[in-house]
Image: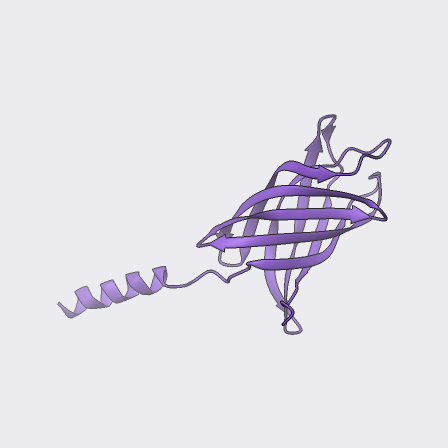
Length: 144
């Protein structure tokens, strides 16, 4: 009987390991490898987390140009998230530029006391694949 309770305790404790809550605002940069329209853009992600599932928006911008995308994602590991932008919901039109719909995998890390999301992205436009790059974001603490 005591082995039964030990088994139940171990099973429950494995389910009780909670995912970190990444809800809120994340800001930083998204880079594009050589050959892209620009090497670096400002990038923001806003997440709402329910368990392992994520919904939200992303914003990519430079100068006065921007695009806002709807996104979904999920935890694929304790500190790994996978995201996928679904569609562009608002944007500026620029000659010679079509905004990429991105997807990627990001690692949640704590560096010098601040949460960060870092990883790779790839994507596509109606013309074909985008030149991929990296994402580096920091969690923004809500202002009181």
